[in-house]
Length: 468
Ligand code: OOG
Ligand code: NI
Image 1 (cartoon, helix red, strand yellow):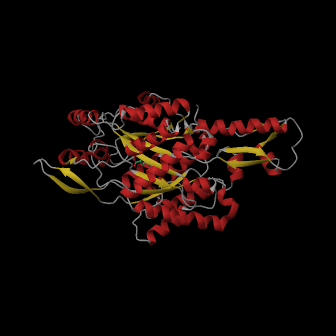
Image 2 (cartoon, rainbow, N blue to C red):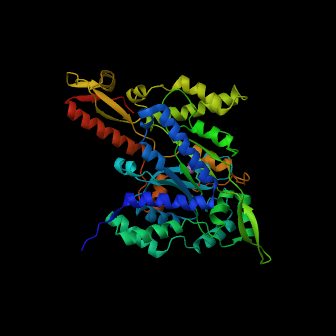
Image 3 (cartoon, protein in one colour):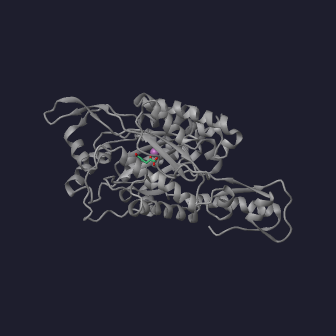
């Protein structure tokens, strides 16, 4: 007898729901954030109609979440990768937050997410996953490194049964119903907050170096740091949360609010809240204390940028910094960014597509195809022979991630920049994980290219597209 496998996308969708339930009981303000996000999205759809779904169907956007977790070693990261592969989530992108922050954030990260467009459309659940760079001398001296290795080496985040089920799911593309249930139960439980007492002195020793290090290497298990809903209007959400008396971080990270298309990713969060935990003190007694690491984040996603578009974005970010430093110290980053964006970035989807700044899928339009052996993207779009549908940015921004990390720290921590850091890059982290980390730009590029090639065949001509 053969039973039908529960496919990985369905496991992934259910995993996201179970984590949300769990997280909502652990951090009740998360439920408020989800309620407000829903209101924002419903109102946005009511105001904008079909156009509102240009960057994703309302079903996808309503269900969409990203999580964030943090682990302590390469072994733990490699195990996380196995667990997520069982849900059809693969490592994409490399982020070095050590250099993206002034304060002490000693981690390197990747994101686990579905890769194929149809898998993303079914359920795009992704998890930003950070690994403690415990051997980076700028943060940890030899003694602290050794104690970290011992502490992390002694704990088990993911049991053998969970890993075996994950491997099977990855191999077969899903699991039988009873196994699926067990897999979901074990996977969800491994991200639940542990109630085991925390070693007070060890936790605080690490916290004096970096709160993030304490949250990873000072506690006996990993947990969800945050779970982030997606909204269609983040400025509206920011206002509504503030009106409810929830203290938000000072500003929205990433691109400013402006008249042109949304690109990349805008994010904001409410501040970390005091949470009660049991601490074991040096005198052996267990007493209650508080710590503050988890927060609520929300995001708005826009169009993915090509390498050329991303380069322009990075130059705009640098220009905003320069103006604030040299010319306009009294204005906020968001105000100055508004000016720089208006001056530098085309404010229509058409121009982003034609100039090769944003990624799009090109399809046949209603108008007749032009004559001749070739046509430019501009000719095709302006005549209506082709239409361009934006490809949504599915990844993260290192500077925003660092900003989110930092705005929620209790203290700056300490770092010694005279020391040499441990070199990490996409290749090295791929080796640690044991799976090649995909380059996000290459994924978007392949998707755009495939659509252009299909359109060329359909129209029977060559399409000239700006060099990205
Ligand atoms: C991850 C912070 C980065 C994002 O959305 O950029 C992040 C963390 O706090 O562990 O989640
Ligand atoms: Ni996040």
